[in-house]
Length: 607
Image 1 (cartoon, rainbow, N blue to C red):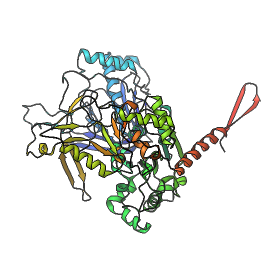
Image 2 (image 1 turned 90 degrees about the horizontal axis):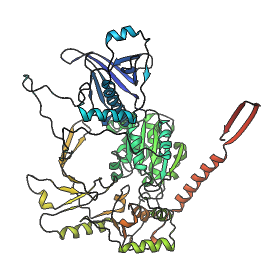
Image 3 (image 1 turned 90 degrees about the vertical axis):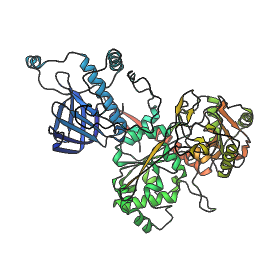
Image 4 (image 1 turned 180 degrees about the vertical axis):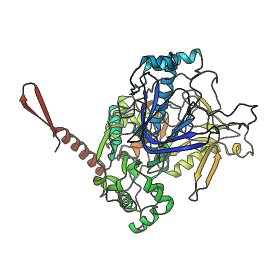
């Protein structure tokens, strides 16, 4: 089990406030680096212990409120009702905070189902003071709480939602504002959700990568399409403190997948083609400088499209701006991508250099790891086909299979296949032709993303429908899995350099009968039609083919085996990586020293 996965411990910033009768803080203690542990005392009561590195403070969790609205941002408040004290947690790794809160809630409900000791019984027991960290959540805890919920709503632990005063008390009651992004299809409000333990766990390979990241090393992990790189990145993001962690990607679409920004936006140095001195000046602008100085963990996704020269420029800027001689200015790098997919966009007619060809690459990256277990596809024949295409090997059998796919009938239930094109002009032409074929108000839906048909990326809605001053009805989205959702307006909030917040609300609609192969990188599609006649980059055909979840949902219109190619520099890079890994395994010499018959001493040498 990885550190913190038991749900009983957090490393975060803590503020403890003592409140008066009006709810105002009269005393405040701030601990920037605190250890928060959930445990039990000698009477098996829940205790929240906060340790500042020298002293520890314990708080009895008997009657309290949880405020979890900003748990996704790593923030939470525990309000202790009898003591009129609140403990504010911030800069928590979001995933760990959610598990911590879930553990706290369930353990408290299980404890309440028993018979707590009275003060008299505690005095008579005469037990010495003790503290023990709470055990991880188990299936029996989940079953117990579900049984309690099915009988009666829990009464001890107050609702997590911060409810206002009841009407009629003379105080103003604010009406709760509905979330524009939430689904209007509500379940039965009186029915409590059934709790369960997390189902999807990390594989051994993914857990090894996460462990290396949490140890503080600069990590590059790679793998073929569908090995769970994006899923693992999100788990890594949820395991790191949000204030000092920045998620970036080489493209805007890839950045959206992980909820981050582009690497160029984070760096603030434009294309990086300017001289180093000018790039440093650009990075020292107040808004950009704050990113560089507060960043301790930098995630870069789809690194295959980052050019070597730009990576070297970033490394130099980081050392200069942060005034540090350490590689990348002491920032921990978590780099992810598959160099056998899309390469960097070349400048003019020169061939772009890959990121691993940068001068600073070997100095910065400490650990190289590869994910090999494919999770997107389940058909082993299709997986073998994709692995062959990935390295540029197209046999007669592979060619025959892909040529045969041109006759696949992949549309079903009225949902059309998404067409992947190599060039933007083909995308625009296809979308405009499809749009002109519509008459009246008609809705065409396209779904993308993982999760068995519940992901949503682009929609198409006829322009006349949006031109109305007031939209009384929202479009309904039907997925292949049978689920129907209502698309409601989304709100985007931007913060300007002057600190002003700007917001925009709209329906997230876009023509998407066809999209480019570059836009599709990272997606999973149930039914996809591909045109490969104008492939112009190595790895482009592989990216397009590997978007399909299955061979039955794939249709290749004009396959030519000559368009499948892999960059020889990348093949050599991966060959060296695997060779180094094998040498590392072979060089682990085990020497046994028989100092005595009952003593075995082993020395592992990796030099």
